[in-house]
Image 1 (cartoon, rainbow, N blue to C red):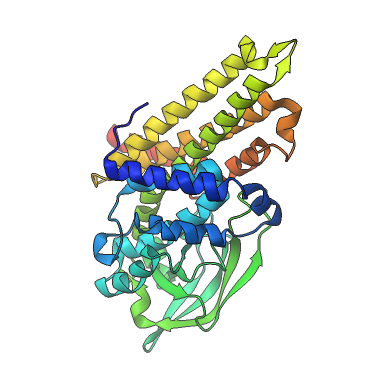
Image 2 (cartoon, rainbow, N blue to C red; image 1 turned 90 degrees about the vertical axis):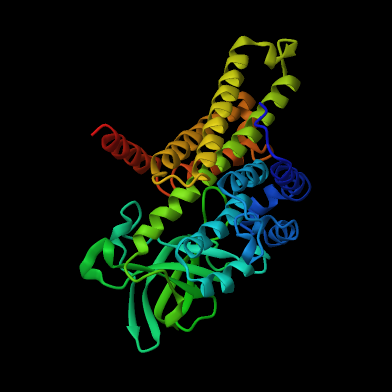
Length: 382
């Protein structure tokens, strides 16, 4: 389908597609096997100015919106969701600064991200605070001109590879959700270190580590926004970022469909290609229908968000749920079309199915997203 992209948007797609075809696809299996962070590919992405898409022009970026980010992430995910996640996590990590940061803090950090010189990460999740983000136990105490942070963040994407971290910590624990604030912690700050690197089922080229804050001292001016507004900023951040996760599902499903159709045209059984069998055609047809429906919803949601509506939570959650559930279904079906070959690491659909699962989990499980949609519907029909 033609989505009538502008010249600039088509350029984003073409640039990301070139990187995917030339840089990502040839090495994705190796990166997956070695659990290796895609440092060189991210440098290529930076040279192509794709890190500047989500940064305003006044900080050296492209000034693009949610839809522009979605287009880039979809193409990168067609090559490897692990690589695309490493790229996406930098956007997620800097979003709180863009949403609530002072002019000084934006000038300092956003320009570095736009140039691709540094990467960002988002430090929210803890061992006892996953879906219940209000359960975080990391604390921040003001001591003179410094904040002192203590706690451990878990499963942080780009952990140990990023240089800039937005950390959510409790400044006034007795106030509950209204007692959380956001801080920028830099790699190398005293008292800041990394725990183990996780050995994951999928997106293995994406680094996932613990962040350990042990009397970590940072300057007073690293507070992002006003004290106590951390959770409001977190919710706004996730509303902006979830269409990006949905687009990873779209890109991944497109890759799986491409592989399945190509294989079905070449694989012969009973003296004819299996794509000539109605049973296989129906599987492929359902894959294509679900994929295109998800793409339309994700694109529509992203364009809606770019109009800065008062409430974007429902649409953001809807597209995340639909597209990532679709990706899990389509990649599983791709393995089925390839049969025994699909189960072997020699063929990329095995990796695609493993990569798909996390999309239903991170940045808010799809069960929680359904809660969000249901709650918003309850408000609308009050």
